[in-house]
Image (cartoon, helix red, strand yellow):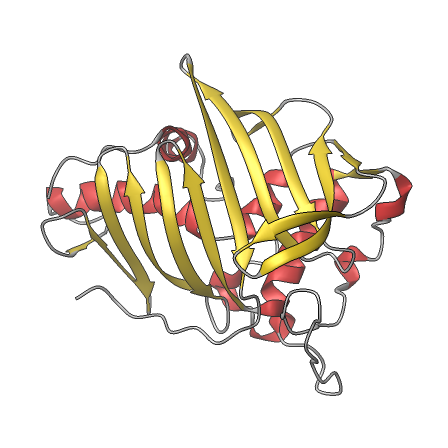
Length: 266
């Protein structure tokens, strides 16, 4: 296994997470890794119907979104972040497409009964495949799958565990909500605008952080989110500066609520 060459955003996550205690480590407030089954499923009386705009099933609006008014022109990050996390968990499944100078690829995930994912990424150091299934994390950086366990006595598994933890942060869409919650105020476009996604063109409001901010020690220079009127996130773009370098990462969410198959690396 080669020495991990983490992209800037993942590397800053490693540094930030290394300085967090277990109680401080960022995690979605509606944590899928604990057990999302109760909060993820819509009430039995709610029968999802197709969304004519993007083909996603309709889920009942979470109570976490009741304080949000996209027509107000501004919203608070403390309201926006928990709403996004709750919406994503309720949809349960989806595909996250990442693009940037140092990190790109596609990740399939589900939250119920626990967060699991499979991703194929391109990084500054080469291709990386990663899977998290049944509590087991595997990572393949070109030499075959390696168990990723930062607590292992095996140095190779330790190194894989450190790299995998950083990639896990950017593989879990719930962290978008956690990261957005760190910004105090977000401006909202006067009306929805067309946004191209893997599902096709979607009408979504553009929300932008009104000021730079820090997220667990990571400087967030700029952040833009596109959100449908029913609070479904379809895309996000963040710019991060760290150690004299700047990186921009775009994330697109598609296939929300559609069946996915999470398979381990082999």
